Length: 131
Image (cartoon, rainbow, N blue to C red; front, side):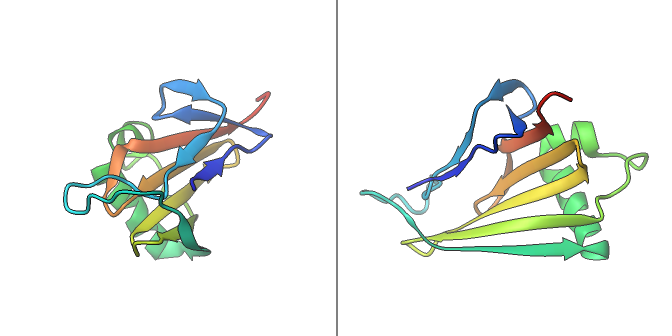
């Protein structure tokens, strides 16, 4: 089972390049150390909110690790977000996937997927439709 992100009022951009109708986050993100066969599914999904200095530290981490985010959101002239929402999902193997929702504004929302590392190819942008 995958996490499906397809909000009706948002347009999604895959890695800041092309528009897409939905973003799928698989219950198993491949890595060389844990090859697994069979169907994977999420057993636990939780949400949390990070604010203030901790959100700023997360922003700094994303600037270092996620190239498209660094290009569009990095630099000292761009203020850090005040809050970041985190969706944490744990699959049947105990592997954790985190989706960070970085609200830079109501019209500029980044989705950064980490499992466990944050990678450029896992990032996407959500913008309001019609804006």
